Length: 299
Image (tube, rainbow, N blue to C red; front, side, top):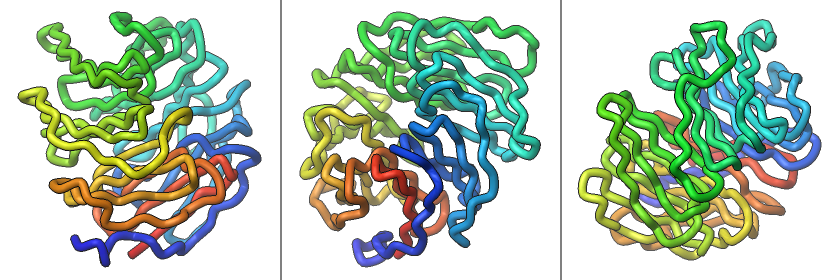
């Protein structure tokens, strides 16, 4: 994919949230997106037609993150009310509320089989919840972090989490092993490359860092954007050829994965870009912002 084929043409502006949109995510096949924000709601959209489908309301404070299962039947969400909500997508009903975090919850993810939800909190902990049992207690608590846990990725056997303590920690569930990689700067977002070999970490010194998972070697650093006080997402494009990240000045940046040069940048929003999500197959991207909008971009 050349820089010419990267998405920068705005095709839809999705409006409806009141106040900052804190996250926007494609579902597994890229047909739908979910967004959440300060207005305590989660919204389901068709990004290709630019239409709003459904609103989910139950949270008592801002909703910070949302994730949907592979089959699109369930979603999980978290936020300022310290709870993790487990929803039925079609009915909009809350199936269960998981309580246990001592403070705001920053991130949530389903595992591949949608049998558990992992949440990351300001209370320096990760908590694992069983969706199949009726217990609202966590089945596992990981509290080796020294500061707020901001972001999580899951593989078939691992939980990977980034923290303000400057580390990205990988927990192998099968053997109970923890590997810690220290970036020396607060980490506010992590994402995995599509081949699963690398971790991309957004740090609060306005630098994205790419780490080789097997060796722990720092492969590359990406600069040019502003990320000092907000949680701004980063991800790799679906071909792993480019790195994408949001900036506090409203810009989106694309870097060449290998040589770290900025191949494309444009003003996507009037205010801080909070979220960037790339379509699993097409040259299409969604962004969200403090300006209360979600925007859909295509090449």
